[in-house]
Image 1 (cartoon, rainbow, N blue to C red):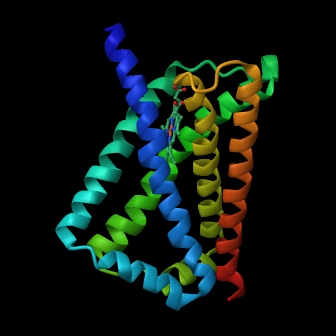
Image 2: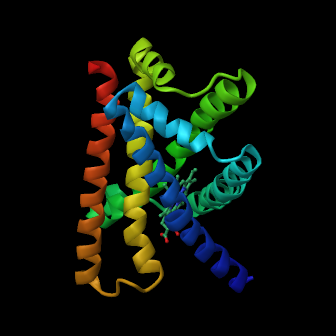
Length: 208
Ligand code: HEM
């Protein structure tokens, strides 16, 4: 039992950092193409469409859906055990611990909505291709949706970046308070940078 929990936690940690981290970077990279306007973003989306459909679907299921479901389900189990106490102690680390859990809950709802709306309903069921024009009318037509997307992206970015610090602690990469503070500062710097990039490409829909 102890061994199963140990290995499940390690797998949860690896999946979060490596697999979902790659998905997050790919998402930010592709979506930042919106800064170049419709031709650039549509071109990037069209390049992905060049991957043969069965391989693309296998990648979506094997490299995104299954790891995400495992990380989310086991993560909910961890969250339900977590004892958040930022008010009692108020240390930065305690707040980061609490935010890691709160953003996890937020991501459950945001990702369910995002995946169902764009991938399942719009693309698979309605047969509407995802394009710059579609995203542009979705965000500018109802800015509340744009705000919800920005909140969801910020939650994913914080969860991932703070996860880099906890990952380094879990795996014994950062031992001792000094190095842990350095890793934490660097990952929060990355968090600020990725949030800024997200804000800029989301904002570009409203000015172009
Ligand atoms: C879908 C909902 C999600 C839930 C419920 C969830 C839950 C959790 C929880 C509870 C932890 C802390 C584990 C611990 O303290 O041992 C965690 C860690 C982590 N998560 Fe998530 N997560 C979700 C989505 C994501 C996404 C989308 C990413 C990537 C963008 C991600 C990346 C990470 C990373 C890198 C860690 C740190 C692993 C470690 O501490 O070793 N998670 N997640």
